[in-house]
Image 1 (cartoon, rainbow, N blue to C red):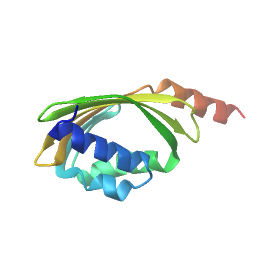
Image 2 (tube, rainbow, N blue to C red):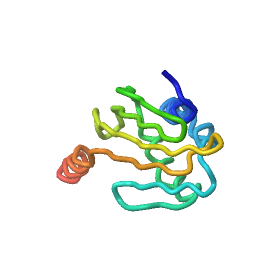
Image 3 (cartoon, rainbow, N blue to C red):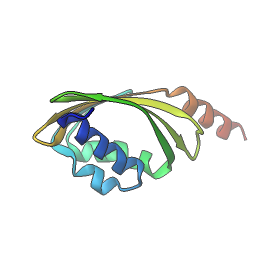
Image 4 (cartoon, rainbow, N blue to C red):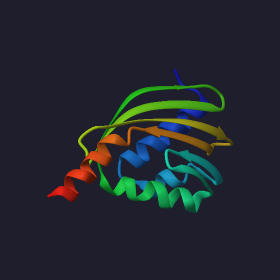
Length: 122
């Protein structure tokens, strides 16, 4: 089952997980509000600064589930990165006129904290 918001969310997700971050950014509204575990971000450039570095360490992703309606989509996925083999995450996206205007990202920071601690100890 597809919906307008889900179609945009899946296209965005496929782009950033497929190593085409510039294409992913075409789905991001200039005035996006992004809620991250570290706090809120406003604007496309702030979003680029947050998400861009993550896509550079991404080595793979598996979409676990996706739902959506006219304006909202919810994706759950597992990512693999250079420092962490499994990092589950979820995104709730609000879409207007084909652009993501609000994005709430939830992910488990514990695997990244453990990888940083292990690297510091070696």
